[in-house]
Figure 1: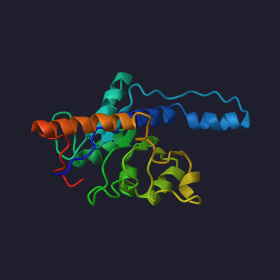
Figure 2: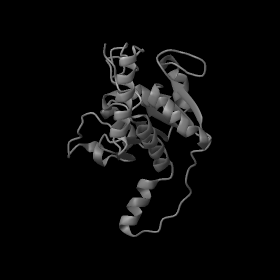
Figure 3: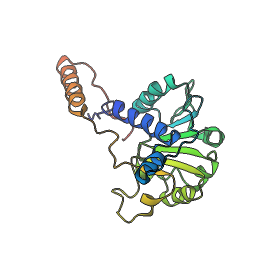
Length: 220
């Protein structure tokens, strides 16, 4: 029997997603550049309140993201493999993408999901929409994303890239409207504590003859 650590990274990744959305909407990268140049550059900013946020991937991390975003007054559109009340499927993406102000990628990387964010996907996104990737770099066609960024159609906040690590001379580093962090969304000071708590629970369940948590059934 194989079990995974689902749930261990929920809190830090969800917090990173909120950070990414707020940083882009409040143009934190632009203000940091202005600070380096000693420029006082006030301008009108965007609100997170009222935004339509599409969550592509609605496992434990997706639910943690939704929990943290609801108090901001956003409209959430979770997308998962299997339909259920209030949850869409990938077949709904052509209708959802043009309406979404932000798309958050939280999917695992499988043959089915590799390159899901391709030119067609990006072309369907709303002009000026945000793309936040906290899933896997291979979900995104990097060349297609570069084209969309340079055209100013989307802005992006990426914790994962393809390739990864991103080579020093890769054009994505210098692309217009993108912020990149080096796959750190799930790394936090509370990681060891969460792992220890989870392992203690699993061992206790095993010794008591109870069902274990997070038994792998889908192949990832």
